[in-house]
Amino acid sequence: MPNAIVWFRNDLRLRDNPALDAALRAGLTPIPVYIHAPHEEGDWVPGAASDAWRHRSLHALDTDLRVRGSQLHVFRGNSSRILQMLLAETNAKAIFWNRRYEPFIQQRDADIKRDLRALGIRAESFNGSLLFEPWELQTKTGDPFRVFAPFWRAARAQWRLAPVTEAPHRFPASTAGPSSIGIDALGLAPRVRWDSGFWTEFTPGEAGAQRALKIFADDAAVSLYRSARDIPSVRGTSKLSPHLHFGEISPARIVHELERTGAGAALDVEAYVRELGWREFAHHVLHHFPHTPQRNFNPRFDRFAWAEASMQALRAWQQGRTGVPIVDAGLRELWTAGWMHNRVRMIVASFLTKNLRLHWLHGARWFWETLVDADLANNSLGWQWVAGTGVDAAPYFRVFNPILQARKFDPEGNYIARWVPELAEAPSAARIEPWRHKAAPLPGADPYPRQPMVDLLASRERAIAAFSACSHRPATNEHLSR
Image (cartoon, rainbow, N blue to C red):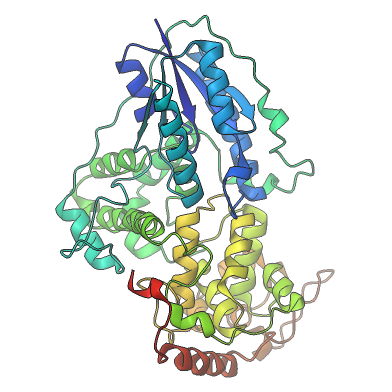
């Protein structure tokens, strides 16, 4: 059988893999290839937490391939040159891959496809990560959506869930064995094991993704999703976000599996699928407005009076030493687990952009470096949403009150107690607002800050005044009307 290169990227799975399926349907022998080329990702080179995850996920994919008589061929360098070298070395007749949607990657892939086809090589790409292509949905006037609700109505009106496919039991035998480097040679795994806390909750790879989905679907977690998803002290969410980002599971398979849970959980399943819709919306926005990872979507805020970036203030926020327990709990969870509960992400983002009035890019960069599910589309949309500068953004006058948020979603302070051990033995109310109580710190522990680093009420009022001044100025930049 003639050969085909299957170029793996952020689609590190064998089930529901359109590029792999296309090679097999064409009667070609797949040569699985991974090319490490972070320098081709523009300003958003993957962070350390992402690298740690990718290291394990690549090993998991290679193991799955070897069980089936194949293996992952790993390279590092210029993607175009390596692919052309592999064509000559393997005598492959085609190259298949699943699309990525980051602006730099889209342009690179378009150039590669053009060059390969000019050489007479069959080069095809597929949608392997989204329910809808980012360009498929549009308003009645043919414009991209800027608000989630009508976007989701349009998605539901055009709903067509892709079928799922199983992994091949055995790969066709191939005599082609391109020389490659080992996964470990990529240097993705940290030398100092600061990532050890990640793996108590997560198992990278396709099997880990399937287990996470099974826990969510079969252990009644999904049937409590609407009531539990905002409670950070319980496992009320699926924790599938890193598996989705690295393509270890497809969104279509998640929906298929959850829809089998029965009518009793239908409303909860719909609520969860709507959250998948936000992921779709994020990619829609990134595709149509590729400047949003770096610049405000709404140019009215280009003149916003951000506070001067104090490294001391930024480090206190990053290290979970702000003196606001729910904020500090979230940031310590992030550092230890490589993940943060979504409700808490909004709280810590609001504190940075509104109470500290630091530019949202400072937070976006920190999340990018430390989250195992760091995704350019989601990260950009989320930070601009909270900051009030993006599409469908929270109104500028919406400032998350971290005390009220903690009282509502962590009323006993259980989440705080887990991640801020200095307050673990304090009464519930003192865990939330320790400065209003005389709770002694734990013996031997670093003393918790006596006061929040900023006055919450005064900083809120200053932020609202500054945002209000910007929001009423006329826009001058053309990208507002795109």
